[in-house]
Image 1 (tube, helix red, strand yellow):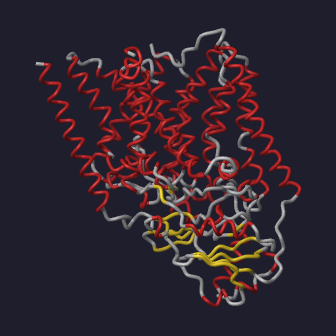
Image 2: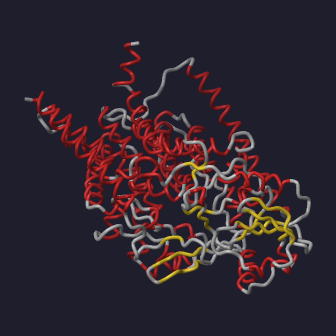
Image 3: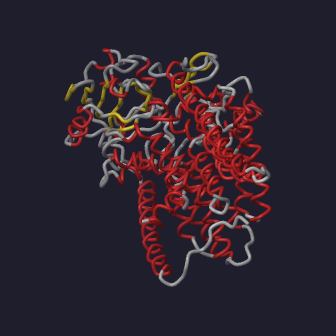
Length: 584
Length: 46
């Protein structure tokens, strides 16, 4: 009993307990019954396995394989529980991962690392905007760093690293960020591990990106970005101190609505800069002791990421030219996303820097007080992250008609995709306290649907409509703009049904619904049948091959996990555990 | 001396944190959203 108590008060249990406490303080409103719906974060009870979730909708594969994985898992687990598990895992994994990396430095510095990993502006802003897959990549970074050290020193842990990379590669940008982190440390010469094995691991991790790379290559759009979108999505200064200081303090997301109020306090830049300076001292100490290639690479990537984050500000039109003309460079436009490496580097190294400075203090009581202070200062500097960013992230229930819609649609035999109106990307539902959220209808429906892909953004130059990459949606935009009846849509567009969500802006004009047959209506939802015989969109042979490859990749990962589990179990019966990071 | 100093520092830090948290929560609820010079998604105008 006494030993167990000691484990929780002074052992690793304290780190896990502190991470769990911070996680609960942030996520408590998200854990209530229901779904968290905030900007890009949409979850539904059960998502069908549709071609668009594998990257074969009419638009570029932006949420691939995230949506396919979500659809697959919700066949057996309710989406509500899967979403809660993901949100908890993000915060817990990030906190415990950093705490574990700092295990050789002492308990207070581990706790500070846990705090910095969980309670920082990068995590807060990305959580409110709903980029949970990007945050999942963030949360596996410390575990990947530990795995890289283990591989380079003991020639073990390859499967674990591949699994971590798979977990962190659920959307294209996250896949690139994760792949970049592992490639150089794995290929860098290491004395005790065969190069071929490390090379094969790099290859496997690159292949994890195929589920989105192949559909992107098959898409007619080149993955460039409209010139005006580079300026819109660039990093923003969150106060009079400018973009550089905002970036160094790990904030600056483009959408001002997801920024916390505390980001404009004077404490934000001051504490951010102090933490960066401490992290730089800590990195120097870390690298001097451990000669850790992966940590050095994380810092190089932090510098590159900082430059990418600030490129739209520093290089303006030249950067716009690059993102607008180089295929695939559209992935760079949401520039503050690239602060992910710096956020993790600061969380790991700032505690090491503080420890180095605090050890010079003579008085133990002052040392202890200082340790307590640095553990809680990040929380005090951004207190409005508490309680789901003070209520912005709280779970709500969908009204019953959404479930009925899915059931009604599932038994319809008439062909054609569903056109979703109003013709705008985001919704503000009463049941979600009128918080902005991406339209959930495409995820609720058991058949492919078509929603607008243009995005309207308010800027100081007025409202800018950023053109989407969905050509079918573009044709329908033109049709809707002329207020012609949707019943006359050309069959080649493949629209067999129209779903109207009442009470959302802009309400479709009555003229556009003339000639449609109302099939079902309940609450705010109305379903119409388009009489013209729609051409059913089917997958081409090439697209089928890619879906099959996805299935093989997913199956191979599960087999590898099972094999690794068996091997680990056998090893644990013959050898002890290896140290993760030596601190000196 | 140290026996007194520790609780005093803890009390001061605790008061600062509690005050900061209260201020943060209240101001975040009453803050004017969207600074005019920063973009945000427009709901339902396109």
